[in-house]
Image (cartoon, rainbow, N blue to C red; front, side, top):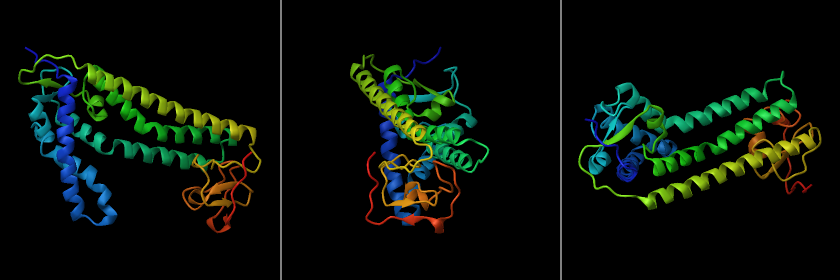
Amino acid sequence: MALPTAQPAEVLRAWQKDNLYEKNLSASLAKLLSSQHASKAIPISFVLYKSFTTLRELQTLGEEYSGIVQVDDSYHKLPTFCNRLISILLSAFGENITQRLLRSVEKQIEINSSLRPVAQNLFLVTFKALGNILPQIESIHRALSYINGGPLEIGKTLTRINYVHVRPAAAAYYAHLRLLGIVTLLHAVISCGQNLYQAKKHLEEMADFPNEVDNSRSCVACLDEIVQPCVLQCGHFFCMQCCYGALESCALCRTPFSKNTVVPLLNYCPSVN
């Protein structure tokens, strides 16, 4: 006989409990690492915590507290070792790896001389928008978990891991949790819409002025307000972080440039169109 599916509230309680233990472990681990590598304590502590529990077919402290157990999509067996390992790696490093892949693709597009400037601009703005909405995708997934049930981590959903009760739980209707899910979903969708609107707006600006000097306050490369403006040999303005960063060609006209040709503009602010 199949065990009952875990309710969203029990899954949330387990996640909150595990998150607390992971933060405590991360704080202790950060003290042992240098300041340069302190930021790595969070994913490392997550992997360590899951390695000593989930990977060894044991309940986490949060799962034991809530009385739930991970199962595969048949709801009769524990997930395979491979699925458990993949879910842990995706939860710990999935967003970071995706961001790196998007930046790598952007760089390849920038140096691809076979693409027309219009196509390059379209691809660059699209990948930039995708990078901006990645955190909102996690929020949308969590909101759907509040509403419909299921794991809160995208890694578990992708590897078809779910939860069942292993001890009796009182039946209840968690209307407040569903309301939280709806509010979270609306906020994430609105944030995604704002990012897509900004991307569309930048595409329209670049289409209207493809070869003119950019006199707006927005940097076409990073899509943020220009800070410490610099001008390239082609006459287009960008912020200093982009000019001395990964940018190797003008994001408007695709003219290659070297770092020693970038001219910082002190006490200058581009005028508004």
